[in-house]
Length: 208
Length: 208
DNA sequence: CCTACCGATCGGTAGG
DNA sequence: CCTACCGATCGGTAGG
Image (tube, rainbow over the protein chains, first blue to last red):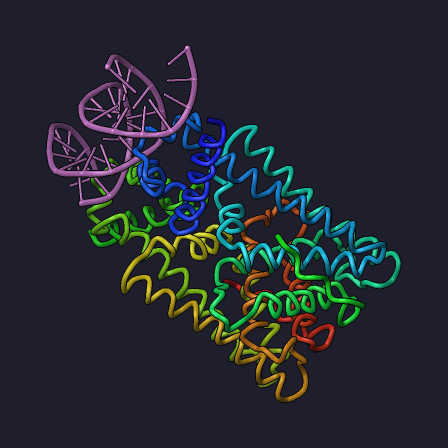
């Protein structure tokens, strides 16, 4: 049954996500992943040709999904660079705060990939940076941003780094809500870009 | 000979730093570390009781050294919160840009520690955040900073996260000098804190 | 600091 | 003849 195949595969990917989040790809055994799904060790190889391929499919999916959301959020934000920038930052914050397992796995474990698989993921990561840098450069030209050193790539990198570690420490224990997080980080990012204190309208909290 | 013993021990730590930086603690074998020093596998246990203890001593040294530099830089900066903040940010940027192997190992591999060793390192990491948050809170009270949401810990965390990933991508290939890096990040951090555009004087590039 | 080796576990695959 | 596994074990390597 194709349905059963897909479900087992997705369960393996979901179990791998949690285990890789908690202890990392290299410290997680095939046995642990399959046992988390009630399978024995060999079952993994009905779905993936190797542990490495499972990692690639997981990490590629995480990056593809994130890029899909950033592209959609930027389109939906309209033509204003400030609105586009706020929308992109909101997507990254939401991803790292609400789906921190996937985000942390995506941001850390891609380093265990090699060859073309690594190159493919690095290309997506570069496009995500370029997307933010393009918006910053457009806003700098139109005068709504005032970038430190005039460097759009430099500011984009700093903003993404600031967002990228949220998944390391954010806990949805009620101390900070996702909405508070994304407002705080949009404000910080706008300050870094030398833009207005707030966007004209707050981006709708993205469904990442 | 104590000299030879010490030299071998330091060589093992230095080789481990490079290997952990390149591929991580879990993916590095004891054999690789010792072979990098021209030893066989068992030689490591003349200097460390286990691979875990080597990691602890390395990570503890990295954190202790960083805290020593931040304490000294803050004292040397005088009473102004803006000067203190700029000095602390400069230390963190210098550590991550100039000594990125040690910084990256310190920021990533401490997660493989457990028990009291982990607790000890986490305590230092908390003090480093508190140090920055204290300076931000003092500046907010005196009116030289205007923190997003009034949260000194939140801004401190964002600034440290922004600096913490420099070691992931910075290359001293001449595209960006350490001085350019530290000026860029001090400016970004001052914007995040809602402070003046630049410090009254640029901190001397710290010798981390 | 080396050689020799342990208990265990690694990722991956066999036949049924 | 298919799938989703099983118990058992492959060749190698881990930390100690």
